[in-house]
Image (cartoon, rainbow, N blue to C red; front, side, top):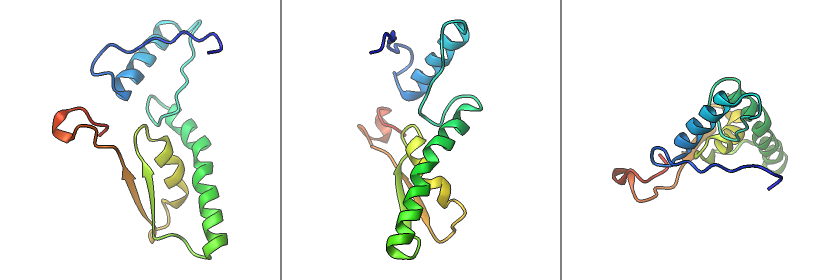
Amino acid sequence: LLGAKVTPVTSGTSTLKDATNEAIRQWVQRVEDTFYVIGSVVGPHPYPTIVRDFQKIIGEETKKQILKAENKLPNAIIACVGGGSNAMGMFYDFIGDESVKLYGVEAAGLGISSGKHAA
């Protein structure tokens, strides 16, 4: 797609963490022709902050629309926590609202004890 070279991750268990580590390793070794672009809330500063600042629009819009529709804040917000961008985007505008419970959820995969899960 658009001329990108995709390099599969073969180290570790091929999790998001392993993919992120490999992406950073590639970037550091080839800074003259490699760019580090990620949509997850991981990696060195300022990347998590950049992702938050773009993704927080989700929570801002949600808050604005729920207040317009219901004239009150929701009791709870639920978001997927996989790479963190969904949850960061949804939760950020609600962090200071103590009346709103924030729940992060993730797929169980083959179960916690299997080692093949998203936790």
